[in-house]
Every structure is written in C-alpha cells, then in structure tokens.
Amino acid sequence: MRRRAAAVGGGVIDGEPRLDLDYPEDVRAEVDMNVVMTSEGTYVEVQGTGEHGTFDRAALDRLLRLADGGVMRLLLAQKEALGA
Picture 1 (cartoon, rainbow, N blue to C red):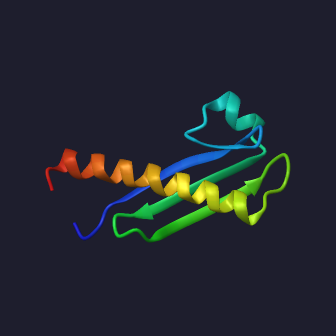
Picture 2 (cartoon, rainbow, N blue to C red):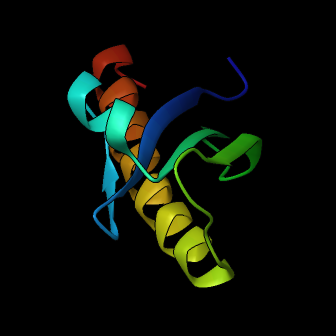
C-alpha cells in the first residue's frame, strides 16, 4: 500500500466550526464541508457549501485546520490497526 486516505465531514453551527456533525446539526449548519486527504497530507477532495449562509476565507481556513487534524487522527488509527 503506497498511501492511505481518510475523510471527515464538518460544518459551521452558530458561527462555530465543528467536525463530525450528527444529523440534527447537519441540517441546521450554516456551512457544510467534506474533506478527503491522503496519508501524505495531500487533498483528494475539499467540498464546502454555504447551506444557510456564506463563509469567508477565515472560516474556510478554520474548517480546514479542524479537518486536517481529524483526518490525521483517523490516519494514525488506520496505521495502528494495520500494524504498519
């Protein structure tokens, strides 16, 4: 295996960026975002949508930082589970 991939979802609720929204949070999120990254730290997909509003570059940057951290935690768990 050359590299692994992981994905997280998140969004902005009441002005606060969050990861891993449950259904009630997701339907009321102002912004919805999905991020897929590789174990090399490169992006496969970044998709953000202003569902009930718009977002600026600062909000995008905050969401990406959260997503990066979430994906890295998932990739570490994958690595540990695979024994690699």
